[in-house]
Amino acid sequence: MSRVSTDFYTELIRASQGSRSGFLSERERWLRALGVEAREELLFEFEMLLRAVERYVHDNGAVATGEEPLVTRDFREELKDVRATLSQAIRLARHLMDPGSDQKLQFRRYVETQLADDRVRRSRFEDELDQETPQESLFVLRQSFESLRNLIDSLLQLPVVGYNLFTDVGNLVLREIVLNRYFRPFRLTEFRVEHDRVRSVRLLELLVSVPPEARPLYTTAYLALFRLLHYLDFVGQDAQGPIPRRVRVVLSLVRSEALSLVGYLRDELAPKAGPKPLQAACLRVARDLARETGRISREVLVELDRDRAAAARASYAFAQLVKAQVVALTEALAPGSASGEAPFEQLSSAVESAARLRKDLWVFAQLCRAVENHLRNDDVTAAESIISSLVAFLDYFQAGSYQLLRYVDHDAFDRFSLLLTELPWPPEGPAIRTRLIEDLRGFSQVLENTFAAISRRTYLRGFSFDRAEAELLRDRFLVSAR
Image (cartoon, rainbow, N blue to C red; front, top):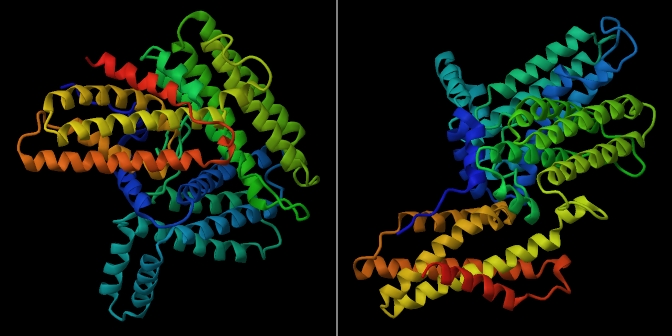
């Protein structure tokens, strides 16, 4: 029997993580078990802020655009920005902590302060720093940020905060982040399965058509561009209040990451992009991204202190810039595929993605039910034929609709994919056959529930399910497996 291929995105994401993939796999298990609302988005914002503080201190747009020499400038406002960002990170860390674990770790910290024996106290402190679990790792980072925030409060009482003092505080923050085992921020070409997906039917189909040697390069470019758009979702402000200080830090991150992406497009993607027209197109995308990022920095970001509307203008300008580069890259790969009015909106249509996912879930459930029914009737030959169709369909599903699922739904799909990968055929003995029947029945129910949940989405109202089209897709896989 053929075996299920590994999800291409999972391979790319694991490869991007290098030696840290083991820690991050353990973190994924923690995240999936965490009973916190919107946990993936909370974690993304948390790690975004870690990355933003690092870039704000060491590649700071505010520093670069200052009119005074660095040695005479007062960095009090920038230090306040760092403090506000740490405060938000502390709040997010509290939300991400399981209440039971948080109380346990808090109590352990209290007990350590009451110990009279220095050797025992030191041993417990070293155990805490080992960060054996994601919960402990998050707790240690939160405690460190609270201590650094207290330090910053004292430093802000000084008459002047010089550049060296500002960067020294930044180095202390960076050290705590780098030494953290499970929550180090991602780099430009490092991705997380819980955050980074190309949720566009057209782009997914386009990437499948790209030659295998170039596909990871283009996928990395798309993922990096969509991550910039994700950053910009956090650049908000109250209608009446001042610009939140952390917004300045996030915009600095967007600027810095955009310029880093320019280097990737120019130095890594363009030389291996394929024919010369594609190479030239990648270089144009890099050039336009660099030019417009510079213009936004010079004309809009410098106004953040003077104009409370500047943050919204900068966010809009960056979003339009990034969307234009997604369209330009897509047009280069498939001329005419991103033309017409509002091309980016066409590429990223939520209705189109949901309709595709709904159709594929229906076919998936149909194939699972068919295998289950044949096994219940002891028709192993017919079941084997449908299993072959199911394996082929899973390959198709992983290359497309799997990317459109919510992260919380991945676990059930991953477990079923593993089942098909390791499935002995024919299933020998009534116990194995019964277990397989139950697994198929349970996963069919998951598919049907997910189908129903997607059908209830607001933007699908008025779009009826095209059963005839879904049956054609099902029959295509049934015929191809015969």
